[in-house]
Each structure stands twice: as structure tokens, then as C-alpha cells.
Length: 102
Image (cartoon, rainbow, N blue to C red):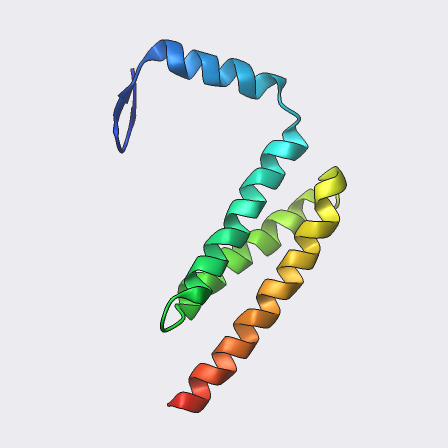
């Protein structure tokens, strides 16, 4: 059995997940993780007050991932890069607003 925060996962479930993963397009799997980093950054930026340090880590992770794969995410590549630019701009705007409030 494998462990997760919610308790043990039966080996047959882990094996089924691995079987599905081995058949998945790796570009789709990596893009899914990249979208998760984008969403994580957005959650931190939407907090009141914005959690800029936490958002910056997620943004840096997304940026590093996209730079590391070098355009190999197929049709997900362009929207992810656009999303990265937008989330960076949001971070800058919120950072400036937070600085002017203090």
C-alpha cells in the first residue's frame, strides 16, 4: 500500500493509476502541472491581502517549468506562456498597490 495524506491507497489503485499514466501524452501531464502552478499563483494573488511571496514561488516554478521544456508542450505551450505573462503582470500590479498602502 502507498500512503497519502488521506490514508493508504490500495496497491491495485496505484497500479491502475500508473497504467493510465503510462498511456498519457507526457506533454499533457506536464501542461496539467503547469496549469496547477498558474492556479496556485492566482489563489495566492486573490487572497486578502495578496500573499505575494507565496504567489512569487508558484510563478517562478511555472516560469522554470516552461523554460525547461522549451516549447515542447504542443497546443498548451502558447496559452501557458500567455498565462505566465498575465500572472506576472498581476503580481506587479498587486505588489505596487500593496506598497502604496503602507
